[in-house]
Structure formats: structure tokens, C-alpha cells
Image (cartoon, helix red, strand yellow):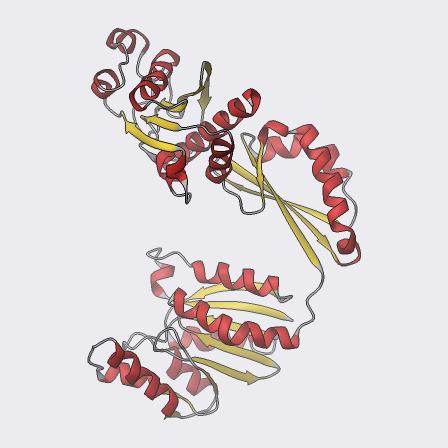
Length: 414
């Protein structure tokens, strides 16, 4: 089964909202054996909707359209679909009762625009929405199924899980596909590809490799399909074993494990406590670490020492060292790390100091210069980095690099 995803929304086209719906839908379709051929975002405009349908109807087995089903006048998808499929609008009694109950249960008055959400084209199959007020609609024409869903992610996901996924599973034989993702940090995509050139060339024909980079991290996704899938477990063991011999220091986890989860697991296993002293990362490392459930078991707290006075007064960094070496220096970041360990009584620490930009760089210390220091007991590892990109990108790269440095120190000492 081939499919396309159509997202309707001016707010997406002007960059006000990020389209997470299409990504989630494509993941669900692929997991259920449906190939996604195209994704398109169009404006909430009747002509655009009709032109897009003319282009895709008959070309794909399945079209999933999201958005434009709200109660306001700018949401015109439903009326346009009624016209396109030569139908008239009728009030669906079950949907109407559902909407009435929805507002009654919440102690809110229902206005006319809400009531009109019970109006649907008379030749569609109605998909009941148990998560909101706008029903989904199912049309079939020219050998194509068109499913129109609300754009609200919570409602869209509910309708997909309640109606569409079960229907797909009845119609599609899912090929046997095995995915395995290796999470790496510390090597840019192009350098990683060069390091792994021989390993990649030696992969069996039925194993496909994809490099999936984001700031500071590259995911290596292995896909084993059909004829080799029954042997996937043994094949992956051999393949990953060879990979571990090449880049052991850069692999921090598998599949959906985040770097902060990997670090937290390691700290917990070794009964360690961690604190952070952050300057250029502005608390981002602490935010990542505390996003993991159970992090209170190993993370004590952080000091965002953005101003030099805080570095000296709170963390005990020697003011003369700051004057002589500069805040972005090996000496300062090491004193920050020791200072936060003493302040919070932890046996591990991370400290950061750098220039995230876009201003503040010099010829000697350009934007992207970052010193990182990690400590574990008496062990201290300090490293200078030269990151590139936007301010946010530099902060992300510094945060991930710092967590990976601490992982390396703990693993070496374990």
C-alpha cells in the first residue's frame, strides 16, 4: 500500500507551528507496512485542497489529510471535501450527541459553531472522535482512500489508533523488517562515515545503513528486511560487535536511548552523584539530565555561573585566574568543576565555559570555543572544543559532548 500525507494549515506554512503530525503519521504507516511516497503542506484554501486532491487521487492507495476541521470560519476542509466528492452536508446524530455530551460534561455552553461540527458529507464514513469534537471522515474514489483527520495532535493520534491503524492491519501484510539504531556522539557525520567505510562495505546485502545526524549526535540505523530478518538477531550481534571495535568511545546507547538516559543509568549503576556548573550552556545540561525520570537519585543541582562574579563568589574560582586566563579557559573550568563538587558534596561534576555567540568571539577565542571539564573522584578530564553553527546548536553540541566526556571517565574508572 502506497500513501501520501497532506497537512493543511497556514500556521505551518508561515513557520508559526512545526508539523509534528506528518512525522508521527509516517512512523505509524511505515511500522504497519505502508510506504509513504510524499508529504505536502498546503494552505487552508479551497482551491489548494482541490488541486492537491486532483494531483493525488488515483495515484496513491491511501491519502491522510490533517487539519482544517475546526469550528471557525477559516477551517474549510469539510465543506471543500463535500463539494469535491459531490455530496451534501447532513447532521450526523451520533456525532451531535457526542458533541453535546462533551460540552455538558465539562460544564461549558455549546455555541452554534461547535454544533456545526456534527455536520458531515452524506457519502463519507464517519470516524467517531472520542478525544475531541471534530469527527474524522473516510472517502473512497478512483481506487484511493482519503481519510480526513483533525489537526490537533492528541485528537489525530486518537483517531489513527482507534480507526485507521486497525483498518490498515486488516488490509496490509506487513513485511518482516527489523530496525536497530546505534547512538553515537563526538564524531560529525562525514568523519564517522569515513571511519566506518570498510565496516559499511562489509555489511550483508540485505542490511541497509542510514546516517541520521542532529547537533552533537549521529544515529546509525540498521535495517534488515525480508529474507534476512529471521537471522537478524545473530547478524546484529556480529555487526555491532565489529562496530564496537572501531568506535567504542563514541557509542552511548541503542534505539531510542538518549544520552542523558545513558549517563543517568551509568551514574545510578555506580552509585554516583552529579552536579553541574554551567556558564555558556546556561543550565541546558541540568535540564537534559532532570528530564529523565528518577534523576533525583543521582543529580543534586546546578549553578548557572554566567557572570564572572558568580564563578568567584559562589564556586570559588580565583578572580586573578579569570583576569589572567579569561573566563573561557582550562584553569577556570577546572576550578568551576571542583567548586561545584565541594559546594554540593557530589563525587562527579560537569563544568562548562565558552562563547556560544553570535557575538563575543575574538581572534584567539572565536565563537564556538568551549572548555569542558568533568570530574569523578580524583579523576579530572578537561577538553577544548571548537563548535560551529548557531547559538542553540553550539549549546546543544557542548551539552552532549560534556555528558559523553563524563561517561568516558566513569567507564574508564569503573
